[in-house]
Image (cartoon, rainbow, N blue to C red; front, side, top):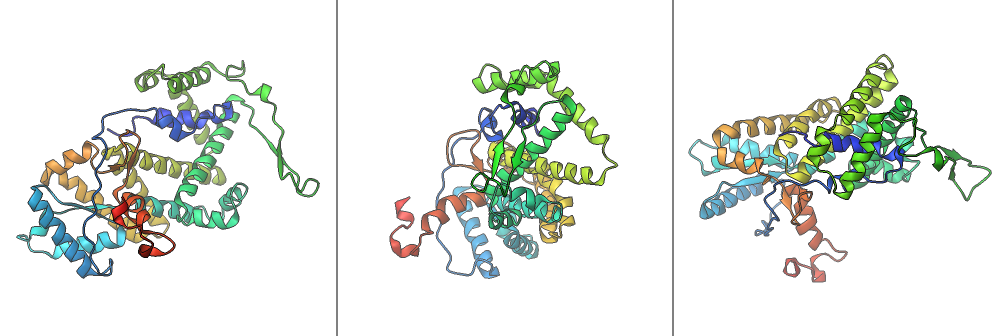
Amino acid sequence: MGNETWKLDLLSKICWPLKLNASWSAIMHKTSGSYPGQSNITFLPMIDLNPSDESCIYTTLHFVCKEAKKNKCTPILTFDQPLYWKAMTILQNEPTTSSLKCLVLKLGGFHAEMSFIRSIGYLMSGSGLMNIFETVYASTAVSHMLSGKAIARAVRGHFLLDTALTALILSDIYGIPVPKIDVSSEENEDEDCTQTYDNSKVQIHDTCYTEEFSNATDLLHLFLKGDVTLTDIDQSNALNIIRDKIEEFRQSRTKHRTAKLWFQYMDMICILRDFIKAERTGNWHLHLESLKAMLPYFTASGHNLYAKSAWIYLNQMGMSQGKNAEVAALFERGYHVIRRTDQYWAGISSDLAIEQALMRSIKTTGGLTRGRGMSQL
């Protein structure tokens, strides 16, 4: 089960030039599927040691294995890359009879996403990406976005730019008028920019649109209203035609280096979108596929530690299907993510759940002494 909702991804990008103001997240919220339900988050005792110290990691591994043995289940631990590498080294050096050999280590998806966003910022440095973002965000915010620190803002910015690039491609293919902005810096200091496009030229069923484009927009309207299902969209051939025309457009411009650069950028954003989708829906196979697609970009951007850790993680998860079929079956059912609410589109990475649940409850201006400990959860 891979990316079965790619047509919804395409719909979310082609709807903007047609003034169908439905974001990708809003469209994906309409999807449904099987999922294990809301997760139960329980805080374990804290170890008063440096988290990066190998003694702390070794103690954590033994404690989790001991608790898992009491509950007769397989212990699964999630670490970010530096701790994952140390924990993996500890397990490799353990004898075959060690109780730690039953552990299943996972690489934190949230931190992997942050590293991939940093890779995008590094590979696109000098391309004008920063200047484009600075038309929407402040310059200081843009530097944090490209470094992967302001991850939520970075995802919104990258998706916005990817949608704009798709709109330019569709404008060239189908002759769709794209909204234009006139910037006047000296004459109108109070008004930085004014919209000058004519709304009457942007109609969903305009005669300049081909039949497949009209059918695609109709499908999106009906899907948002709940009149059609994802199966109906999959059976439609309109989006296949649009995808093929976009691919023909890209192939016709492969000799242009600037075009190839931005096409590569769109491919990276597609990988990012697939990874986020895998975490939100609990799609295990898409999680592995999208993480595997990140490997060349980790290497190209100099993120060698993440490239090595992700490669080992993918190999370990591939071998777990034969060694530990029970855990593999749980992951395929969506248990590799955590859901704080009982919704299909609500999965989050386990390392992100720590930030949203435990760390948020204890991070205050005065620290733990302000009386906002775990007892208030």
